[in-house]
Length: 456
Image 1 (spheres, rainbow, N blue to C red):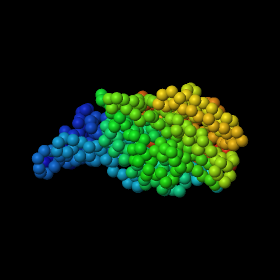
Image 2: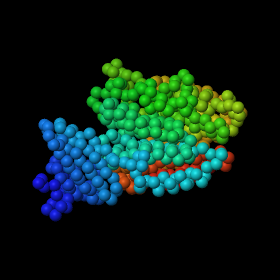
Image 3: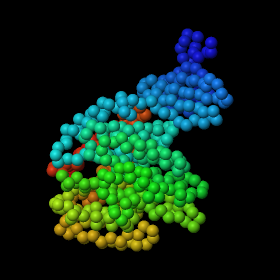
Image 4: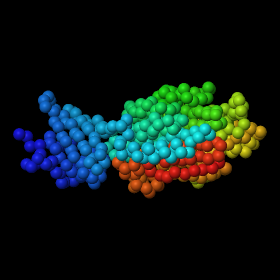
C-alpha cells in the first residue's frame, strides 16, 4: 500500500522551514503555519495538510485541504495540470459568518437595540477592506469575509442602510482582475436586507494599477459611467441623484420622519481624460478631487430643503472615502476649501462665494443660506486606516479604522493594536445611530476599536 502516514498511522510531521506544499506527494501531514510556503497565511499554530493527486490523465493535478486547528478554519485549493494555482477558498457555514463571530454580533445587536427609538436611524459603515482575490496574505484575503459580516448583520432588522466607505479592493492588479474583485463585493452586498451605498475609493477604479504599469492607458481606469453601472446601479433605487450627472458617484438619502439627510460624496471625482498618447491625464492614486458639478449639487440641491413639507431644522451627515480635510487642517481633496465653505455657511446660515476656475477641476460657487441654516453632525471618512475625531472650521470629522487585517507592523496604518487573522480584532466596522431628538450620534464598534458618543 502507498505510504500515506507514518508506520503508527499518525500524520507525517514536517519539521523543516520553507516547505512548499505544492511539492508534497499524496499523503497526510502536519506542521506549523510559519514553516510552510504557498499557504493562506503564516502563523505559529498547527495546521494539517491533506494532499490528493489525480488518478489518471496527463500532467499532475493535486488537491489540498488545510485545517488550521486553533482557528477552526479550513481551506481548499487545486493545483492544475499546467501548474497554475487559482487561490484558496475557505469553507464557511452559518451564512458566511464563522461561528466564532456570533457572540460579537450578538453583543453589537444588544448595544444598538438598546439605544434605538422612534427618533433614531442606524447605519452600518465599513471601510478600507482592500480585498485581494486569491490572496495568500491576511491583508487582502479577509476583506470579502468582513463585507459578509456586515451584510449578515443586516438581517437582524436594526439597520436602515449600510455603507462601504471605499477602498473596497486593493486594486493593484490588471483591470480584468480588479473588476472581478469589485464583482465579488457587489455580489456579497446584493444579499443585504437594507439599502447599500458604496463610496468610490482611490484604490477602486484603476489608478493603483496604472501607477504601477509601464504603459498606462485611459481604458485601464474605470470611467464614471462604468463605475456607476457596476457599483451603484444595483442599489440606486434607494437614493436621490443629480439629474444632470447621475453617474457622478454622489447622491443622498432622506429620512423624513426624523428630518435626517445622509449625503454621499465622491472624492474620486477626477477628470476622466487622456493625454495625446492615450494615457490617462490623471492616474495618481494620491490625487483626490470634488469637481465643480458635484460642488454645485452639494450647495444648491443636497443642502436645499425648500421642497420639503417642513423645510426647517433638517439634520445632515456627509461622508466620503477620503476625509475632505485632515486632522492637520489641510485639505485632502482638490476643492476641499469649497466643501468647508459650503458646510460652514449651512451651519451658520450665511452666504458663501468662491471661484477658482483654472484647470480641469476648477470651481465657481455661490450659495446663500440666510434664513435657512441647518444641523451638520459630522463628515465621516476612512482612507487613513485610523480612528480620528477632530474639528476644523467648525466642522466635525470622524474617520474610522480600516477593516483590512493589518496593524502597524505592515506599514499600512499608524494604529498599533494587533489585527490577527482568526481573532475578532481582524475585522473592524461601526454602526452609527443618529438621534435627532437628543442631538447625539452613537458609534457602536464591531471588532477592533471602541464605542463612543458624540453630541452636536
